[in-house]
Length: 402
Image (tube, rainbow, N blue to C red; front, side, top):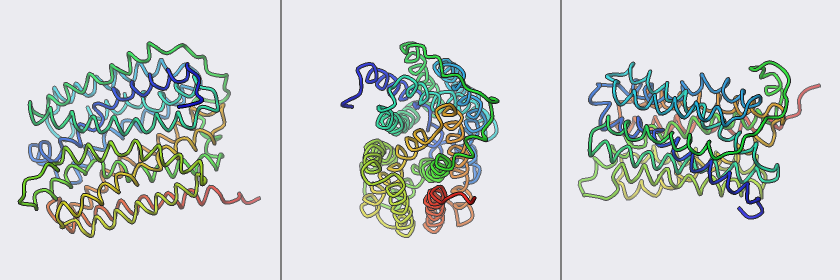
């Protein structure tokens, strides 16, 4: 973080630590899906994907309003309210969820709360930094997301195995309170005056350069949340086919998969700054699709063969994240940056929910999560989704007809 002012460093550290707390309950459902919720609630793959995607659906509904509001009021105020709602939704799931629909409802409430934390957190960060400090700071913030997800995977599975799956929700519900506390340490900022209606996205939609990054982010989220939802189930399938005892349990693999995302995202953004954002992002997406197809083809092979591919995939999947989000923020009109972030997040989390559900549908259609051919189908869906990203970036570079 050389070259960033002392105040900027303090804000970056505060927001990254706060985000780790916000993310503590973020993947509780995917973490315990295969071992607890699918057998106890008798869920099909599509139903499991729907349950896991319900958090993203709640996020998608709320984020257009909450992120756009940050163009008018201090994002810190939205962060405080969002953190409280996120903690409440997680707590309700642990106490009262009894099946698919009650679980989906409480998970959606938690998603609504997270909508008041992630993009408003990014806006709170950029509002408190000098313009020249934003690109790397945004990448640090978005990449700390991955560290938080890894922490969520680890805590959720360990607590669930030790004290039951409901305890995992009760423990992780405390996480968003860390972000709430972090918000109290930030100085107040009054956003620059903006014109137009609250949910006026016309200026965003007409910003072709920003929309290219937004649509590319959607493809990224489809792949990211698809694999994040099903990584524990996939490695459970892989481990079950090996008779030898191994430290490579689903907990270990899911945590390592998530932790690798942080350096991958940072390095991906540096690669984009050096070689060009569009070129670097497209190269990463093509590589990720190829690795996904290879994993699917080898799904019935032993863990020692699949592990290197999973680790490579753990790098390619998130390597475009920081570059896409910083590209969007820098391409946005400053007076509509909150609305642009709202669009970015709405598209991203809409396709996140779709990715989690689509993999479940593919698994059901091809024989279920105990079938190697089903995992081939699932990873093919991931590859197809991420390949939409380079198409979106190509479209954004084309000149608008006059």
